[in-house]
Picture 1 (tube, rainbow, N blue to C red):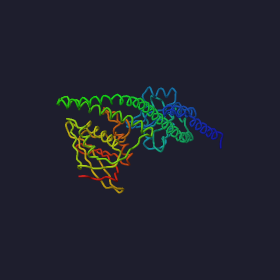
Picture 2: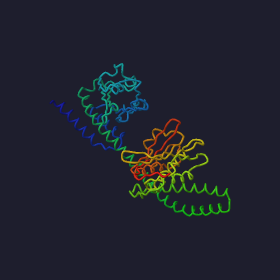
Picture 3: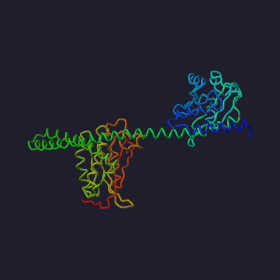
Picture 4: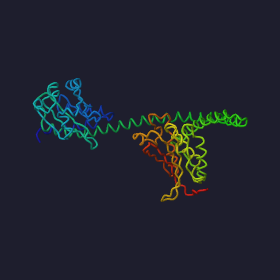
Length: 413
């Protein structure tokens, strides 16, 4: 091997070593430092890492060497190249084939700004992939003719592979950092909310007791209007208490303290009581069920799940449309199941929200709740070895179905 070949080989190894030593703090920082390393090794006046930006269908220089030509490129706006404009950067990205020229100023396919404004006469370009996906192009440029050799192109191909590796590593670090920040904020918020929920729950207990006393007095004295107003206030207190319970149960789920007390109870009787509480003048709740249905589950947890589903339905129902609550018995391979479907007419659930619908604090842009009800309903179903599903059909009508196995379910007429 010639001395020149040895020096090229040593330069490649040195560059690769320094590339792999780059701290994976951010994609932009990694690409800028990579460009500096390659520019120094190739004696290039400018090295860019262009990444494809789908929203604008452009190749954008996310990493450019800190050189006069690099600064000029940015000042001229040539660090953002729409694919529709053509040019060699776009061509290499679209074909996946490397390119080398020592007479760029005579290349009719190259952009005028590259040739005339930047004065580039030599360039080598290599497609950039990361994690098996074509992501962009690495470009080395010089104002001297015939500056880059075929060996330089081979060198850039080898280095570009490792630029893709370190870039992907930096992307993973950025993603993990973002997720860690979000998780930390969420946990801090949950801790504050849990304390508030506990304190507010304690405050609501005597308020509800006082309202019960006033309601009985109004009924005894025949004050129908006062009795009706007190009932509405009690419903508001019930809603607030449910929210407090939801917040505390989120904490219990996080800490593994969420437990069940399974027993037989009449599901239809429970739903009848809930319908009377959650029906509103705007949205009556119509119950479709047998006269009685004994099921096996934790009654307090099932009530909590059904309250959350009814609250969600009455919140999102349109106009003065009714909410439907339908109870069914189903026979599955593993035995009898029970299902309760809560349906409302209203705007369909956005597709992008469906993937996070059953996560804590997930909610749509128009929602005024905290995004806990559906999460807890799904967790309660899961704890009973059941499931909570959602579907939207033409109308539009949204159906949430809570179902679980109830081997001792029996129907009474």
